[in-house]
Amino acid sequence: MKILLNEIIPDSLFKYRNFQSDLHRRIITHQEIYFAKPSEFLAAYDCEYTIDRDYLKNEDNRREYYSKYYDISDPNHPYVDSLIESNPITDELIDGIELATRKKIDDISGIFSGSLTNRNANLWKVFGGNHKGFCVELNLLDTFPLNFGSKGYVKYVKDADLPKSKVLNHDNIPEYFSFITDLIFNLPLRYSEEQEYRIEKLFFEDSQRAKKIRKEQIKSITLGYKMSKTQQEEIIELIREHLPHVTIRRLKYDRPNLKEVIIN
Image 1 (cartoon, one colour):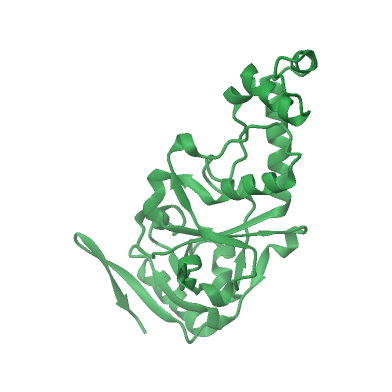
Image 2 (cartoon, rainbow, N blue to C red):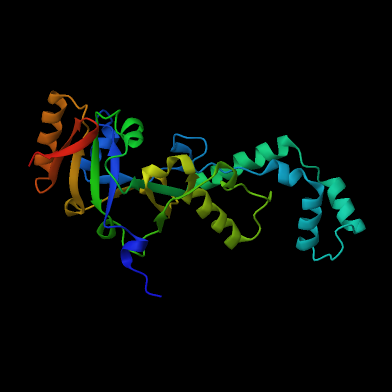
């Protein structure tokens, strides 16, 4: 079966930015993007390592785990009994492991996320300064070659299907990284209209999280429809100074839809 390249990686990725943020403006002034730590995402459901407490507190599940781990055929073997008795699962224990694992993931994982559209109202509201910010279109394949990190379309699932760890200790490294990938690339179904795409990369120094990109990798910039005239003039001046080749668009609210107006 032939797999088309745009089924793996789209042509463009849109990044919503708040014009009031110095960090966000750096994509214009310094052509710099940032790979966020999981803890820097705004929503509790997003990239937050969570253990399935009900599953682990179920004795039958624990017996099955110990039987498999120690290669014991009988889940009611006396040795399994002793493991159950000597390793109680408490909320305090789970709290500590969740906290330690979140820090571990935070220390090495960096995520750059964007959308396949520059028209999503919720992304404009949350990340685009309540429609007063701007949205940058990147040439995705040129910016992130196929061999750069892990990348993919976000999968939107029911809340009950969001990843939860069913073990306390991830001794199997491939399974651990597979779980972390699921954690990063699964979001609640109610956000499916955001059409998110993510790039994840390992970092061992926080100073590496900022990535310089080439000016040519920025294709266009769209201004939010609530951006004031003064700020429009300011950002247009910045774009023309630092990114003179970039197409500038402005969203205009024309009931009941938004439409784009090309400024240059």
